[in-house]
Image 1 (cartoon, helix red, strand yellow):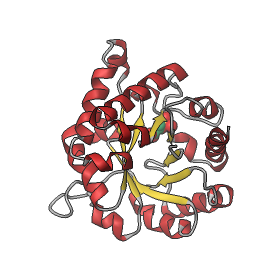
Image 2: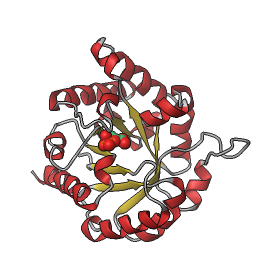
Image 3: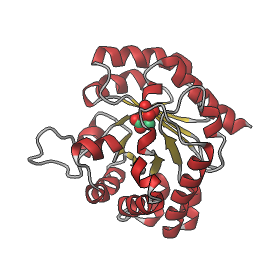
Image 4: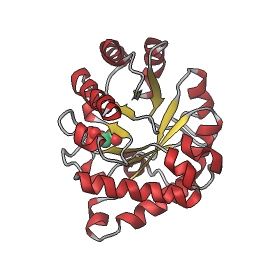
Length: 255
Ligand code: PEP
């Protein structure tokens, strides 16, 4: 049984004061939920404030990126020990916006994912195809490459600790959502790729869908057999839609 996982990626939104306001409004709605892992990922500067606000609640706080090295001449970057020190619990890695705008590569993710685990951080490894890749029939090839590279240096017995997010790039922030069939097929394919490393670990690995998940489409997506949760961008920036998505995950567990 895989515990559902709903993560809100706040991206480059919210000052520290706004982040505190959002988490304070969210906690009474979702701070005690136990059936679902609930995560928020604020911008680096807001992490400490949100960690402090969420301490003692069921809401975990993740970063949106980290460097694979622990320290060094990497201006503007942040490392796993720095995140660990402020009690961040996990980190989103390989988000398509990092890949597209900041040259994140599968090669660096090959280092980042195991480094996060070693530091006690849960990695959310993001993968997904562009619109052109889907149209060319290259979706599986792209996913195979990203999943194999990203997980290559993760010890077999720790594979299930990695959360994988399948996010078709054409659905992120566009209002377009994968059809249930597209989401289920791609996520089942990702699970089969993890199973190529270890079948039992693949059954335990949480695989999320991301791409314009909203209050009104969450229930349908979360009911799919291989979809273990959602990575939510725009829909996590306000309390009501995000809480509704989490409620849909709670309902999916209970049904
Ligand atoms: C995301 O940031 O990972 C994402 C899926 O964004 P949105 O929900 O806004 O499409």
